[in-house]
Amino acid sequence: MADLRTNFLGIKSPNPFWLASAPPTDREVNVTRAFKAGWGGVVWKTLGEDPPIVNVNGPRYGAIHGADRRLLGFNNIELITDRPLDINLQEIKAVKRAWPDRAVVVSLMVPCEERSWQSILARVEETECDGVELNFGCPHGMSERGMGSAVGQVPEYIEMVARWCKQHTRMPVIVKLTPNITDIRYPARAALKGGADAVSLINTVSSIVSVDLDTFSPNPSIDGKGSHGGYCGPAVKPIALNMVAEIARDAETRGMPISAIGGITTWRDAAEFIAMSAGTVQVCTAAMTYGFKIVEEMIAGLSGWMDSKGYATLDDFRGRAVPNVTDWQYLNLNYVTKAHIDQDLCIQCGRCHIACEDTSHQAITAMVDGRRMFTVKDEECVGCNLCVEVCPVENCITMVPMAAGAVDPRTGRTVEPGYANWTTHPNNPMARQAAE
Ligand SMILES: Cc1cc2nc3c(=O)[nH]c(=O)nc-3n(C[C@H](O)[C@H](O)[C@H](O)COP(=O)(O)O)c2cc1C
Ligand code: SF4
Ligand code: SF4
Image (cartoon, rainbow, N blue to C red; front, top):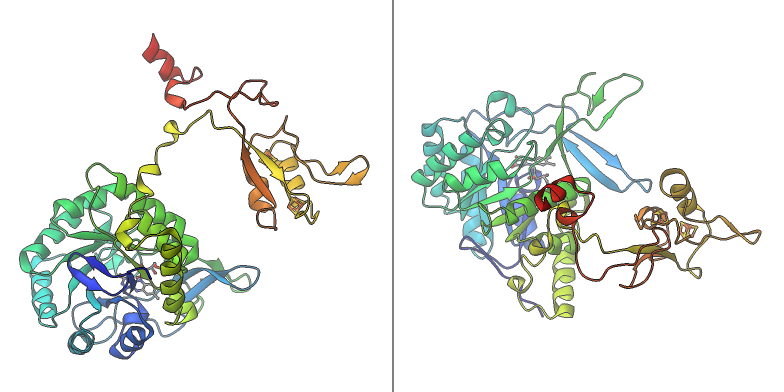
């Protein structure tokens, strides 16, 4: 059976599955239940200075659901912990003592002043927790007060606070990044420059999930008004995966430890982030939707897949996807595919035809010899994959690569062997300039 043990910055946990800083990690009773269920670690709900902040007393969540009511995207306007600092610290100490083999990291957010960070770090150290995560990510409420994403959006502030923290604590320092920024590499580089040991990402994406068409209030509605919140859950996974990839392959931050967060719901999501170099994965929405026991499926699924692939430890596949992430200009333009429809699987719903007919290249028939039949016209198909994505039957449509030497009936050109990309393509004016 695969060994899922994880050592992240010297912080050991029996598996890479940590609960992200959020309601599931807000108090001792929750964290104890989580550890009993099998979670490898937690990042405690963000602590701030006393007096504690105040949350709204009405709805704080909104969501986007799929047609089957499955939760796809989740939105919240909750702030950091609203419990007194002392109580949180006592509980963190008790939990760490009771669960020495689990990771207990404490998330922090205080004003952007050195003495505020110095003072809270000293108190957190006394809990004997394993590390701290600096919350530079929350996009609502706290950011208007100059904290959270207001810090995470200014690389100079990130670097400055990370440096203070490294000066004032012996604990590992993880910087949690906001996705509400144009290029994630800049804040990650700033964290590294400030001496941070790792980055974690993503925090939530600024969002308004819906508007009530009777009251015209954004949801969640507090007495007829709403404010933007933070979006998370399965819908944000692609955003997070791309940002993790950007940091993993950037010349300046390559090799920096990453704790990945964002929409992780299944063992597959976790494996993908680990393949993209994550040291641990953090989960919030999936636990809030399905409960703590979801970790059992994550552990069983990940170790079963690793066994089937012959990976004994997480290091055996960590980062394996990173070299395969490239820029568009380096993609192989000699790679030619055509859609193929498996007539035995086709239920003749017609979705592929209408999608291709209306919005792609009119390459799928609806009728053949006077009867309903869906087949691909290779002479029109550009290989775009739209039909695969809209077909309701998995694996009914597949993309089949053309062999080198064959003639593409769409272009009349022979498929060239080997690799050729845009940088040398004759239509590329820059390539022409370079050649002249
Ligand atoms: C209700 C709620 C409260 C959250 N509170 C915090 C917080 O206090 N500190 C923090 O760093 N992130 C907070 N987050 C963000 C999560 O830790 C996580 O970064 C985000 O939800 C993305 O992960 P997910 O898609 O698994 O939910 C919160 C998220 C939710 C849904
Ligand atoms: S791959 Fe694109 S062009 Fe080809 S049949 Fe499918 S939708 Fe049409
Ligand atoms: S979308 Fe899929 S199932 Fe429907 S007609 Fe096309 S190939 Fe058949």
